[in-house]
Image 1 (cartoon, rainbow, N blue to C red):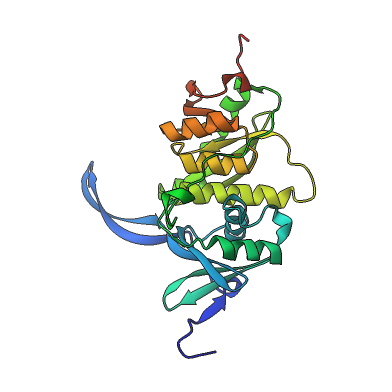
Image 2 (image 1 turned 90 degrees about the vertical axis):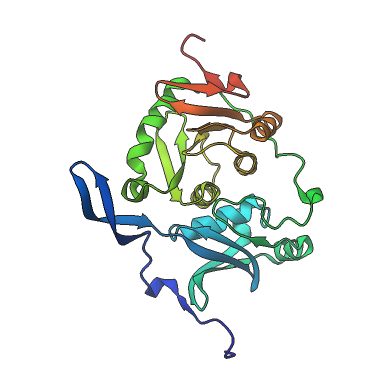
Length: 286
């Protein structure tokens, strides 16, 4: 190894914590108190394909193999999870960060080199590093049609979600992305400081779980607002219903309408707002 090369270690031999303990002062009843608290970790994660660095994102150091798969699929680096041959998680010390060494099929790597896209990641950044406005995608993938999804299933999934956000319960700083089956039961949930990362982790986990079979129909729940990039990631993953706890943007609505995605915002068990493709939701009086 050359002296100027960064030193890395296999992460399997190193502890990775999602939170760090800090001392802080809380003010309120009964006054000022010194307390111990847990704060979410946020670390730079480099994605390296066949030895060539492609992107650096700020992320939570958990479920990183899922993140590697989901990011690779949503960014079009690979078109199917079977084109990812190996993932190694390494820790780099100078400068500090994590490295995902991803081995992909030769045809995917050739296409990646032609794209010449480099990202300088920020938390939740979806378009960093695009060279020009011409590089912006002009359309989304079209999702497959399916049966209507009962409102009761959506309400049931919303009721389950908070209890499954284990890391957010400790730190209060993580987004969640979850996948629920048509009966409203959440089957997979992933958390991250970045909402885009949480969705990539979720879609990566689903792709790996169903790599040899067709994924059961279901819907997506997000603890965040709905932005253009999240709709695009859902479309690539062929998810036809997005349920978000906060509001959508205008561009997200436009892309969801074009992609055939039913986009729901301000979602609570007591009520929600259906913005696009309302026929996807089976209402009680329908």
